[in-house]
Length: 302
Image (cartoon, rainbow, N blue to C red; front, side, top):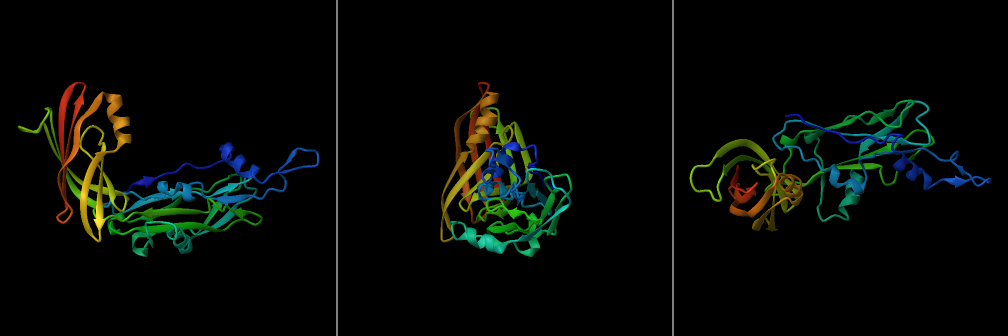
């Protein structure tokens, strides 16, 4: 399944960011008025920078053969581009190496086999402040989910007279390796009762689902109840020996899905099985939905 990630574009209408960015270097004229005439245009990636590192994580389903992420380059100036302005981009291994010096997670550069990036020259067209979508194609089913990879893309050259942003010059696409990450078969069962005795009211074989890593010892995966409130699964990794598994529900999902709909968690979630050797996990929790009891069991298996 091909999925597309889109990002917001910074335009001249985004005045607060642009003016704040430019005013840091504005000067006063002799009359005391602000003089913008000496300001140089700045080229930047609005989705980039270390502050947006988390948003640059690629979390496409592991079974997908191809997915596409998009970013943009902005021409931040006091006016629109006076002509077609050309910017050059490249995969920047040095940016990854610099990041690794301060990171507990050590990344390797994306192998050529798991991505395609051909937009090494892009254009901000005359009268605009930003490029069209710049695509990065990723092949998730070729990615080893146990490995941490990074694809840093940096601005390497801008129009004559411009400067490259020091804070927003690179976007850090990355995937986090985790030993239990990857694709699992998913089955969920629901009982309209306070326990799982008797036949379930629902028994659904959902098919492939991803254990998506948050970090090297934490993954998240949807549960089968309501809108798929996510389990957060954590563990200890001692030299490849995995232990101390625990599970909870993502608190943001509980707040956004359960609370507004009169659903309250009454017990759990608890672990029924956590077997990383055979790739088998089973979790359960109970809720009250408008005063009516519900019991859920999710099973994930390789």
